[in-house]
Every structure is written in C-alpha cells, then in structure tokens.
Image (cartoon, rainbow, N blue to C red; front, side):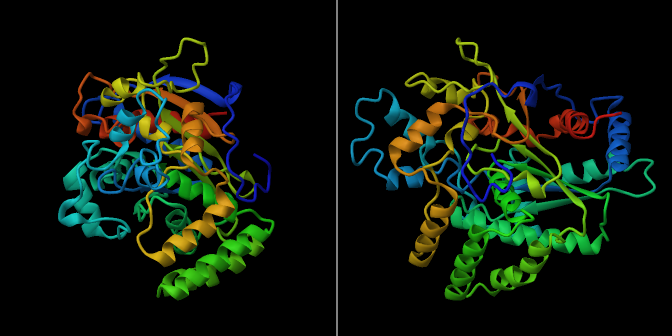
Length: 423
C-alpha cells in the first residue's frame, strides 16, 4: 500500500511476500514448564527496554457472543435466500460453520453482546468463560510483566485493553477513535518522548482497529480523515455519545500536528487478523503480522491458505489448515448494527474504507486465501493446535492459539527477534 494510504483497502496480493515473510514452528511451553524460560523472558525484556519499549498493550476482544465470522452480513446479503450458493458445492455447509448458533461457539452469559465495556468485570467474565482462548487473560498479562521486568531499572508497563467487539466498520472506527484517546493518555501518563516506543499486540479484528489507527496517524491531513471525523461526530451527537465527540475534539489537533505520542513510536503486532483494511506506515514504527498457518496446498504457494469447497468444511472443524477465522472474516462479512442510525453511519464509513460488497465479492476475497497484508513483516506459525479434536472450544477454528499461556515464551522471543534484532 502507498505511503499516505488514505484508508484504501488492502490489495490482497497473492504474490510471494518474499523477504517480508518468515515461517516458524511454535515451541509450546509455559514458563513453569521451561527451566530456562524465565531467563529467556528476562533477556527479552532487556532487549525490548534497550530498543526503547516502555509500554506493551494487549488489545483483544471476545470469541464468544460477537458473530466472529461476520455471518450476519453474509445472510443479510442473501447468501442462501437469493440462491447465491447454488452451483457452489459445499457452500451451504460452510455458511453453517460460520453462523452463530450452528458453529458451536457459545454465547456469553446473560446474553451479553457488543459493545463490550472495557472494564474489570467484563475482563474477569471472559477469563472465566473462555480462559486464554483468543483472550489475553489477567494471569497472562501479569506473568508477562513479572517475567520481562526482572533486572530492569525502568520497568516495562503491561496493560490489557478490551475493545468493544462491534464487528462492523462503524464499530471498528469508533474503537479506533477511543484507542487514539487512550494512546494520548498513555503518552502523557508515562511521559513518553523521542526514542520511546509503545508495542501493541492485537488479536483478531483488534488488528483491523489498529489498521484504521495507522491511517488516522498519517502526518499529512487527508480529506478522508476529516470526513470520517465528521461522520463519527454526527453519529455521536445523534446517539448521545459525548465520549466520542470529546475524544475527536481532543485528538484532532495532535493528529494534525503529528504530536499525539509526543514523538514516541507505535509498533504493532497482529495475531490472526483478517486481511481487509490497508495500513499506512508513515505514522507507525514497526509492523508484524503473525498467522496460525499449516500448508495444505499442492501448488507450491505455501504462503497462502487453502480455500477449496467442499473440502474446507471438513478441514475447519479440526483447524487442519490453521486459522480459519483469519481466512473467512474478510470483506463482505460482518456483524450488522441493530439501530437504524448505526446502520446508516456504518454504510457511510463502509464507503470510505472498503469498496467490496456483495456475497460474491466475499467469496472471491475468501478464495484469494491471503494470509499476510501488503504492508509489514509476516510470520506464518504452526501453533500445533490441530489435534483431531472436533470440539470447537479446543481451537475455535484455529483462532485461539495465539494467546495461550504456552505460546507466550515463543511469541515474545520471535517478536523481539523480528522487530528489535540484536545488532
């Protein structure tokens, strides 16, 4: 994608990423199981600190209760109602695997649905319900903090952020605004300056929120940024969301001046993020995308997922090929806002960030099987979560592995080597 991307959609290139891409096999071990794990994490913390990392933020949502695959929009487009699936073998069965109610993913207690609040009570509920499956638990973050900071004079702060999980364009745009406000708060609270870095680790669609953040951080003002701010401000006024309007008013001058982070750098790692929005690197530091991937192709294109029907409906229940949420939650899929005002605003944001529409376009994007976005480094990792189990809670279609406690040591070692290599 070009510098000053201006919210263009990713081109979803099927070309070999070349030197941008590395392929790894995960070594699974908790810190308790690895005698040298604490030493490795302490050395990693020292490397991060020397690189200027002062803050690590773990951004995530909930696998449960959020229309993970965006099947609502597919049905809204008429996937089965209008006969689009006719003539495409296996498509009916695939859609059943994507839908809430038939994909085996439970709802949250009490019918809790997005927008999810970023509070301690909701985080504890997620920890109780899904543990470390696609969820940066309190235990995970605390272990990270303790292990990285051994021997450091200036500790690295570790924070956990829960985004609203509104899996549509409006929801992700609102989350991007809120996150920019939080970034400003952290820059002020921790007195960040030139040479300091924030490392964001984002699971799933939280990565798409950061893709929007990257476009909003572009140093050059754009008409699309102004238009997006106007749309969201109008929506906030219409729906009594003063928090959004106030945040936009607060951050807009900093964005125009390029001073939101007080000259600190924002580095981003995404885990299992679907390829959708384009990234703008002009306002970011470093960018790495990690995807759970096992090669099933016979054409030599090992960097692509396998998207063939009807075979895919047999692979998905055991997560044979890796992360199927990353592969399927592409353009055309989404949750659908309930209120009419939100639907109208969502359509307006949609016109800025994603040109793809229609059931056939979703199928086309899914079949492209792209794992790594056009910008940033990529890492395809076999997280070894395909054990033959058809219990969705064991793997959540390959989307749960990244945040497991037994991947922390591996992830942090690989992230440090990729983004902050030893001279």
